[in-house]
Amino acid sequence: MNTEAIAKRLVQLCREGKYEEAQTELYAKDAVSIEPEGLPPGALGNVKGLEAIYEKGRQFQAAVEAVHGGSVSDPVIAGNWFSISMQLDITMKGRGRMDMQEICVYQVKDGKIVREQFFYDLG
Image 1 (spheres, one colour):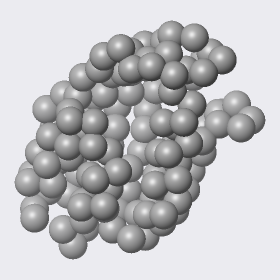
Image 2 (cartoon, helix red, strand yellow):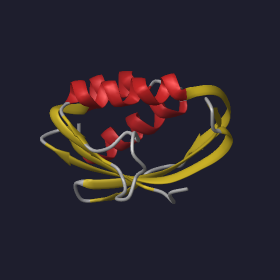
Image 3 (tube, helix red, strand yellow):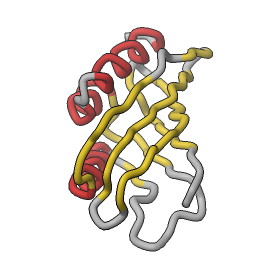
């Protein structure tokens, strides 16, 4: 698949809440996942490898008490890169309800996502 096809498929699966299926189908085994600098202690940070990305997603899901809504934008594509904006209205265990908004940037190489990086306000 080319970058546009991968981007559209990722958006489709994310809109369906099938995040791990998206990772299995679209990510390289040695993909990296990068969070913003300055995360608080105990936060899910940077990881390398598909298994670590799965675990990061599972830990996030385990911290979610309820999902009230959300959205995923259409992708913006530039060469081997694409970005989407994501919004989640969720209640986190012990932290209450919050509106999470982020820009997600992805790099594609050899038909797979090799890098994801998230940009959002901390706190």
